[in-house]
Image (cartoon, rainbow, N blue to C red; front, side, top):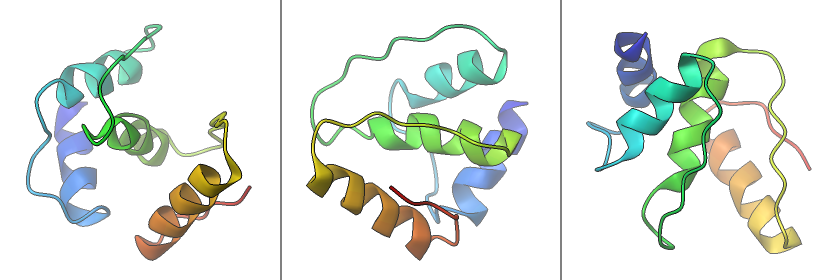
Length: 86
């Protein structure tokens, strides 16, 4: 399953590799496990839930405290060809 995640990372999000800690979070999510990921701002948390969402398809709901953050997420996903709204 991590192979599909790495392919999605490259093909959809145009990134060469996961940052430290991202692959283990993605793998756990794709294995159906509950995951809590705590990481600093700018560490790439978004990719940790974007990749499994694209790999698995369907609907993914993200709760965000600020409209500006929601808009940024939607804009970034849309730029990558992923349907998103808030």
